[in-house]
Length: 251
Ligand SMILES: NC(=O)c1ccc[n+]([C@@H]2O[C@H](COP(=O)([O-])OP(=O)(O)OC[C@H]3O[C@@H](n4cnc5c(N)ncnc54)[C@H](O)[C@@H]3O)[C@@H](O)[C@H]2O)c1
Image 1 (cartoon, rainbow, N blue to C red):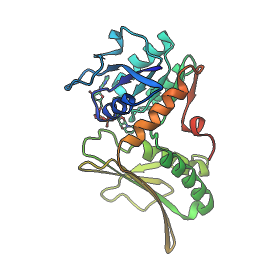
Image 2 (cartoon, rainbow, N blue to C red):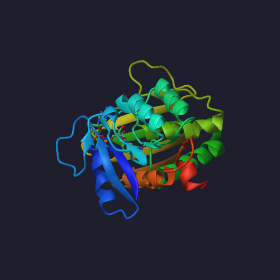
Image 3 (cartoon, rainbow, N blue to C red):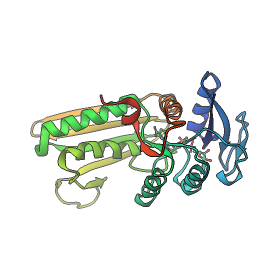
Image 4 (cartoon, rainbow, N blue to C red):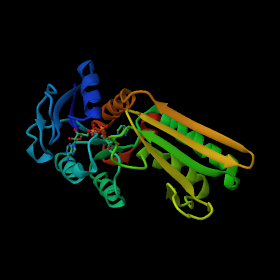
């Protein structure tokens, strides 16, 4: 049995992970880490990584960038691989992840769904084919409780499109006022409301035609299942930074 520490155990993703692990024959929730757990979640929940008394085989983290330093510290010191699903990291925090991955196995993705990862490939292909004459705009929609924008998935999609242009296009988040004509950017727009799980649209706007590629997540279960699959795959792996391409292989 693979023992999983669930960071963010009291959150929406934490609840989905714990629910799926109840019926898993290969992995089990060993403990949780969350400073704010209001309901009994059926496992011991520590308020920080500094308090953990047992050694899990792997961490799954859907919480907040605020825990990152403590988590990586714990992962490196105890040689426990970490699957990081949280989003909203700064460039400095991403660098911390890169550095930790030289010492312990770290898996990070902003989206654990097969569909979104396929969409990234399709977006890259579309950008290569349609080229500079098509303006790229990304619209993402999420629930009212989401604290970061644009979504990590929107950034993943923008990066996929941008890879067709040697990463040269700047990203512009929303527009307002007299912002001037559109330049050579990738535009990103965040809609927040209600209980929307996650919608992403990539528009390629050309002269007299628009190509739209999109993905719609109908529940958070799809991300939780992907993260558990990643955790089973990562447990026991040597140091390195892994993502969905490593797990799924090339499309
Ligand atoms: N990669 C993906 O596929 C994917 C999918 C869904 C959500 N997410 C991301 O996962 C994160 C969590 O999403 P959610 O919907 O479960 O949010 P949520 O607000 O429901 O839950 C977050 C939980 O993290 C806990 N938390 C906050 N600070 C913490 C800390 N320092 N240490 C430990 N726990 C802490 C909170 O108390 C809360 O219980 C977000 O960053 C979200 O964008 C990623």
